[in-house]
Image 1 (tube, rainbow, N blue to C red):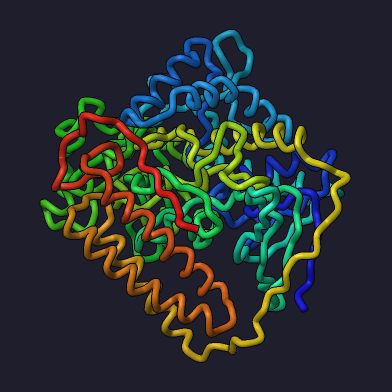
Image 2 (tube, rainbow, N blue to C red):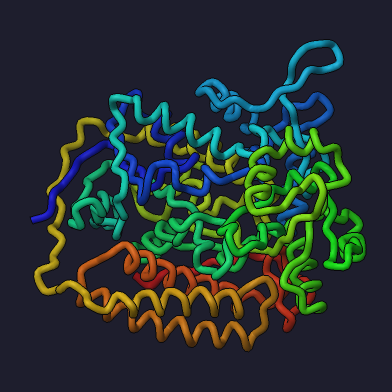
Length: 530
């Protein structure tokens, strides 16, 4: 018999989206936050650049909207873009009131104001940041507030397995989730009046990624299995500049480096971005990533280089202390020499379809942050709009939940998780083998540049893997690796099928078979047969 927990609101995910939502709801509701690892392990913690919002007197919301629409290559929902940009300032003020200490500088009239940087695709300096570790500042502040709140329970090292749904008045309602307690390796359940997916993206489906290990597409896969539509899964953003070093792991080099004048160079020291785009290093990420990928393949080079050594040494150390210290540990002095870089999977622009209140196709189920498709990012996310989306849609979801949550509603007895016919696996190596195979063929066949033949090969391989994993899942007890692999394979299929349906090159989706834009602009929507 599995243990059941009850709450008003279950939030699956503990990044900026999930924690900010928890804080907004906890005044009137009992909240459980489910964290797959330690509470500060998510993608938010590792975000370097910052959050975009209009704080400068020379900037305006219309320009923020315009920059976002241009980067999105015609596929953004303009109403959503405007809603996000208009609410950006208030949401940042809320974050500041929680205690986030963004960098400030002294202005010409001896008053202090926030130091704003500029990143690719932005027409103004509008990125609030905390040096080059903005995500860490945001995450640690939110964690401190959440863990001190009496009405928020944090479950660390718990995997969500699947959503639990029930048909009520001919409509599917989410009533909670099955969870796997990694601390005692037991399956438990949570009944919630409202359930929110805030699980982040799926970049771990690729061999090279800037994301932490937990970015395995769990929320997208769970929502799809439950019956939610997904959209624009073919648009996977590859960050142009991850550090290329055997001991670096997945260390990102923030776009703010290029915003402050860093230059991309070939191994011979020559600059190449002006040959690809008039905006050079400040072109949107899809253009920069493709240019780097092209040069690497053309030259047979392992990497390209990012050079900011022409800037003042003190300026570099002051603005990029985390990067300076980390690269110095690896034997590279960025004040004197260029940094070796490669592109890496960074952000999932598509996801679970939601409305402007964060609602999915299933009643009482919401999705916010990178797991969701709002229409904000279109075919390519504008830099520093990601945490912004988390904050704006967390507030929107909180407002809707506050209005619709029935505090008098009784808790349900959920169905038991039946594992009476499964056994412990003695073949964990199968999971590891499938894991590596999946990430490698996704990188090779469904990466920065695609073709019909590559996508067909990828689909064939993923269908074989799905059959193996489904058989494995039915016969053996769950584990973290099995749950993540099951979700990654599902998300891989959604990415491949979305990519196969787009007969053009737009934004982050570039295919040699259809190099031009199509005459008709449309969002890719996949509907499950559940």
